[in-house]
Amino acid sequence: MLDIKFEEHKGSALVGALGCLLAAYFNEKGYEFRHIGAVLGIEIPVLWKFEIGYKWGCDWALKWYEKKFGKKAPIIGEDSYYGSGPEWKDGMYCPEGKGCWYKNRVLWTYTGTFSDITKGYEAAKPMYEKGAVAVYNIAGPLGLGINQAVKEIAEEKGLEMGPPFWIGVDADQDWINPGFIIASMMKRVDKGVYYATWLVLEGKFRDVIQKYDGVLLLGIGTEIEGKLMEGISVSTLADLDEFIEMGITAEKLTGKKVLPMSPDEIKEKVKTMRESVPDWIWEAVKELEEKIRKGEVEVPLAMDKETVEYWRDLLG
Image (tube, rainbow, N blue to C red; front, side, top):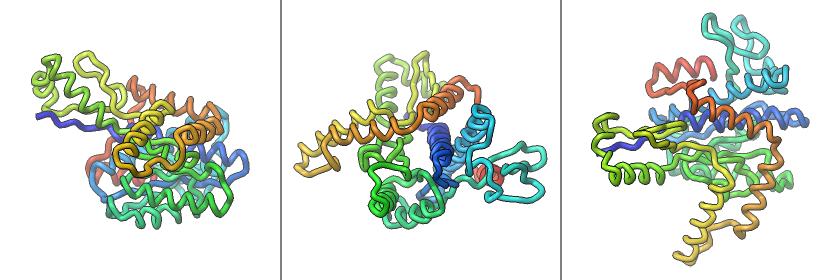
């Protein structure tokens, strides 16, 4: 038997970086986004991976910004609002012997459910009110509750697109509310099935089970038996096309409306939204992805309480 697992912490780092760079950019334009947010389901080890990876990605991004532009990111990088005291310096948390970290930039909560959409709304709405530029859905269907919070804000302010945004999870969720879902952290279960099938056809299935103790771990830069087997990524416009086609097929099979608007309208809104974000943000996320792929940076993997608490102390 082959157990297919994913390195969700690495993909979460990418969207954490994206979120905090969005905050920096929009703050340059006069907004006051002090945070990014995360709505999580039940507190279990697999979600710790998402949580800590996301927070770490934000920290990486703010340090990247400072290095690139020679200054701290407006508001989210420089403000003593995030903490003060002997271990704080220039808006960063600097405990002795542990380096300096951008702490408390991420608002987060475990809702205790993967099914109660209302709790997704109730968790996300205060985050936006406190200045979250984007909220990451780490609770499956609760993303619909996050989306409802965003829709209310958009209607109140007459917005055609974000900010604020939310961030999808597992699948490409960008089509759900085009213009307000900046990207999705994709966990490609379909690719996992494909790779397992490929191993069977190549006669390598049993060998891989023995070599890797029955676990096929897919992430960024994963190579198995000489074949690149990646299963984690940030959504692209090409991914959007695939999921729109799935929606079209579902509508034909069920006779029910699935897509919120025409395929062309979805594509145009998402494309316009992404183009409204400067290239340097997307390039920074790509740079982080390449550094992860090449092993130049290591995203912390938190799978036990001790490790989680260590990183929560540093990052909030």
